[in-house]
Length: 398
Image 1 (tube, rainbow, N blue to C red):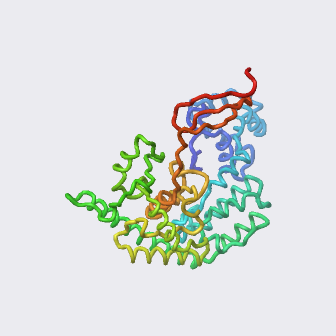
Image 2: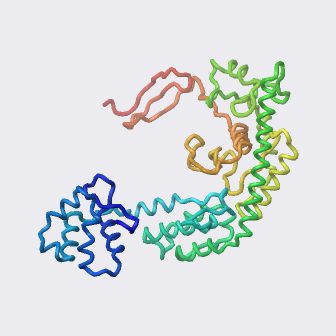
Image 3: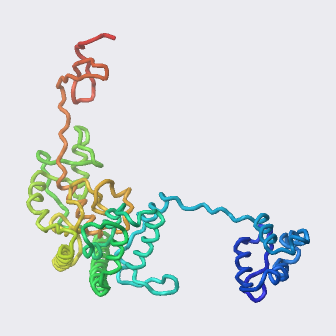
């Protein structure tokens, strides 16, 4: 429409138009003009030769003379599009998936052409989703969402909330100077750790590729009498024991030979570092532990002799936890965390799992066992050796 900043209306569904938006724009442009003025101007807002102009030209003259009839005819020809409204479940899914990342804390983001602190922008988005899910006045999912918040934010919140409004008001009300200070401390720590990890990788690569060199601390004295050897996670059999010993003697970390003496010594020192809770004090203590670890181990190489501090709030080592995130319920290959543990902690957890894993005893050979099959029949079978010798059978013959 001339002067209104809008284009002329085609009405042919081929120009990505919304007919109802066009009609609203036309009425807005007319302002307080009377219906007679609208009737006179309407035809000039239709594209020449377009479907809308052809439609308007074909209207009866008495319809064109009455603006209310023109409007009704327009709505009949281009009825409002029924929008697929979001379902409650969709709002709930988006709400649970809207995560405030620790790395953006203390930073600003642009919302509607204005700068907003990231935690406040997050609270605003969550509020819209909670309203869309019709749970704004309840406490549904608050606990689940609260668990995903960075500890810096979570530590400033109450234990429970009656509704989303109170919860989000508290998030918005957290002192920004507190958040900026904590976020800056965390970023400096991550930069320090990343530098050490980079130096560690360079050192490891150089040592591994240098001609004629090998790590002095990866040679182990092996005594087959008290040694458990793992081959790809399976206990040895009589046919592969010697091969496994030879293959694993000079291996470090997961898959290496672990003697009974190794395991006993490791149990006495692997948990010397306290595992702190996910509180402000716990995180500060963990930060100090990491700094002390790198000061004591400038190479950055993790071995069973250099226990690495565990992230607050994660599972204990050797508890069937995921090495990537330190939590339960899955293994690292299926982990989708956006906050993985540092490589050093992942290596330490893998070392602990390998060192603390108890050997599985092989089934005895030559022992006759009594078993019950799926049908209630008892029988004696040869245990262990792989040849199933069937003995006397008792019970029904059918």
